Amino acid sequence: MIEAFIFIFTGALTGIAAGLFGLGGGLIIVPVVTYSLISFSNIPFDEAILSGISTSLASMVITGAMASYIHTKNKNIDFKIINKFLIGVVFGALLIGFIINIFPGKVLKNFFIIYTFFIAFRIYTEKNNVIKNSTQNNFISNLVGFIISIISGLVGIGGATLFVPLLIRNNIPAKLAIGTSSALGFIIGLGASISIYFSSLYLEVTNNSMFGFVYLPAILFLTMPSLIFVQLSANWLLKISDATVKKLFSSMLLIIGLLMLLN
Image 1 (cartoon, rainbow, N blue to C red):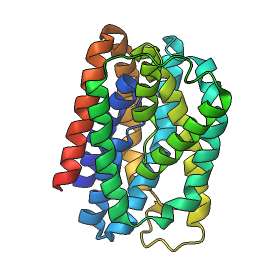
Image 2: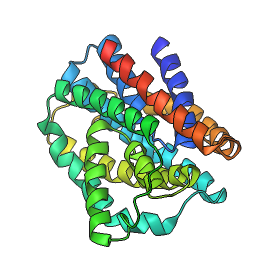
Image 3: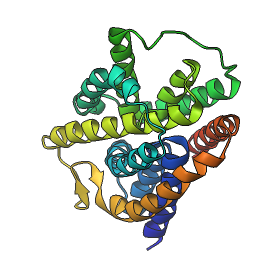
């Protein structure tokens, strides 16, 4: 019962993160599911964090789809930008399932922590310098999309923490960058979830509540509150200034990184 309440609360935070910041919620879901499996199911850390990442990516498909739909209605998605990154993002996402088992759990955890601190610092200190034409070249854009997709899949997130700063630095308004990143995150979550599921068929999973590496109780209790809050927070975004969005975004990343580091 306690675990269910934790997931419901996490689902609400995930919905807010998806609607307000374009995040798939992985920066919240991964540590929560990981330590829930360790605390309530006595799952070894290496398996728990892999399940946390896989569950986050699966959840991202649901929240990402809803967030993308709402951002499309609010005209906060630029499909021309998505097309620039699409091929690289898809290939990177499909590759995740074949490489994620290579990395030990502690490596994934440390990478997760370093990643959150680095991105929080970059966003907070960003001086809005415009990099012209860095997403004009299709090859470069797809290469960037591939790299972001790989990094995002290994951490269990939708890529907004990399796509949003990149687009903002290319003179894309913060709200449009967030909406567009949410759509790219949906693609990463879907592709990575498919590839991880097929890779899990060749490995033994110790928990009966798993579908592949996805922890089903987390998906069940995360989904409904996340769908409710993603609709609310996507509309909140229309009322907040770009500068405030960037500060809130970086502050949230810093808090999550500190919590993961201290545990």
